[in-house]
Length: 297
Length: 314
Image 1 (cartoon, each protein chain N blue to C red):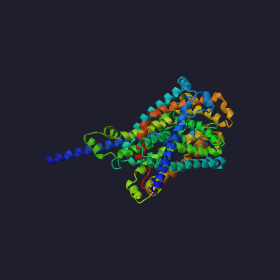
Image 2 (image 1 turned 45 degrees about the vertical axis):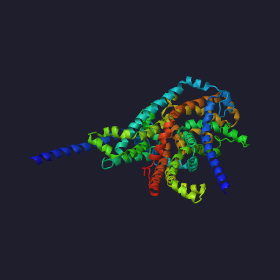
Image 3 (image 1 turned 135 degrees about the vertical axis):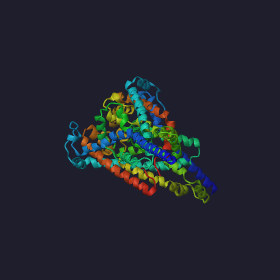
Image 4 (image 1 turned 90 degrees about the vertical axis):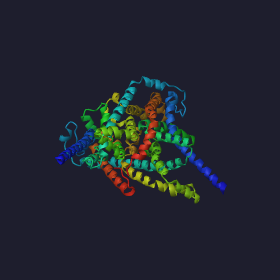
């Protein structure tokens, strides 16, 4: 009886560890596959021979990217966009979250603003009217078309507002006694105390802007203005078409297209590196942000 | 004399105070101004653009001079055989993602919580959260490499004696592919909240029940799951409004005309017909229809959440 119990206990443990390890591998292996492809020769990729280790190891794809002017141009546009968006988003987030964290009594008109913001979260004009506004403002093909339409991040504002509400009132009162004005209170009291929460929304902004390809797709009419993700997406279309339309394998032998596959994989690997660099921070702050701030009691 | 002075001082003090109050209020308005301007330009003006849905909008004439057609765009929309198909695709794909994604995240969090080796647990978490942070542009390439006709998945299938499957080109397999790969991308990240909920369950309950002889299954079923129920319920309610968001990025990066039949969703349809095809009015009408249903769903979800779980979104 006792033996039986410990046997099933061990079996259960084995099953649990197997399940968790498999989940991990299922997430990791497809990504390893892309890295392996990026370091393999075109012929090996064309023959679909690449699994988890590179076949005929070569860095040709990467040397080709070094020469690819448009890739680095798009990379630069994405970096520029992430930085500008981060600045604009953060300024607007703290400036809006602070007054909104006041009660209706402390700040007359607070609820009007709040309702306007919530309505903007609930309802929007949709893709086409927004596109036309950006177009009529003459923002098409400028970096600002990637920054300004997303300037007001409502979700982040509400998250930081809730965080500000939790800041002890005595801190603010003390600062006001010393003759500080609301701007100074925000700068000297609220922002320093909320750095972890602000890090969370900063990371939302960075990841969202880096990964977004749709704004580039609709607001940029020239490939030379594409941010990185839009550029990579526009390249992979041709290959996708070939791959998918090629119900017969012979199309896949089309070396011209397939030799692009390792090049494309290398581009994807490089485009992911900036996110991997901040990944430790992402893990730390996203998780607290998700658990603490997403819903209010 | 003295009292007059006092009175005076008091008056001045109060004036100062009320002036300060006004200044404070003014500062608050000033702080909100930049954000409100952007909100007005990029959210509220486009709302006015919704008027296009009731027009036959001609870009050269603009919003004011384009002819008014009433509900024509909407009746046209409902007369299209495509539209019910697109609604069906959207809802099936979105519901599939919500239901399977939630179930897998719950199961994963329960099982991960059993892992006692801290190092292993942390490593697995690091790995399974990663796909969440990657763009669908990146993951589409990954999916393409795995699922093309000669990709790894088909190699595995043929190894075990199955036939090759054309995941990306078959109308039967495309929806499962979308649902499966989205669940793959998000299950780890979605498990974070559930993991937090499990940690919140009183360990004393587990101890007591194992003394009473309850086995692992019984403890999961009678203690852990009921402990997680409020958060499961809350997230289920709040995910309801997403049934019209089947995921533009994913579908757009993976679909081809071959799978429009089952893969085309509302957002991709509006983009293709409305924006690329320049049917601005029609595209806006379809978008408006979606926005309205979305808004009703969010409001109902928020009310339901308030009613059943004492929490709310806003």
